[in-house]
Image 1 (tube, rainbow, N blue to C red):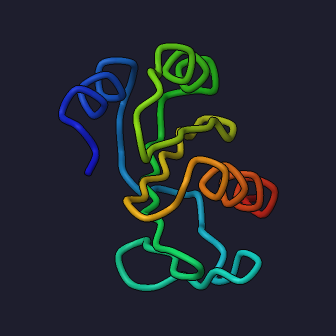
Image 2 (cartoon, rainbow, N blue to C red):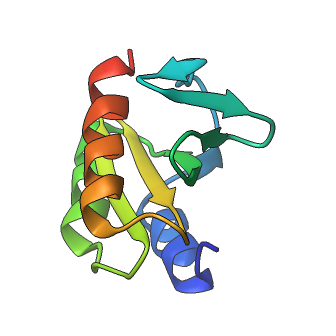
Length: 105
């Protein structure tokens, strides 16, 4: 689901390492984490976490992020979190992103 261009951007901006150090909660509201960093609830959302060298690089990656249908991204410290869903409307994906962002440590 993640485009090659998105991965290249993250790698170029600094030390891309997937799923490193940022732990996803098992439960986010009515959503449950399943295998492969996929949450299931009223829909299905895949979570991809990229760790960058520092929070400035993560901020720059988010600034260069271009909106894409079915995808949303946010920054959490030195991490960029990309959410992908084929079956949620934009409002549902935004609501899930807000809940997830608040629950990440």
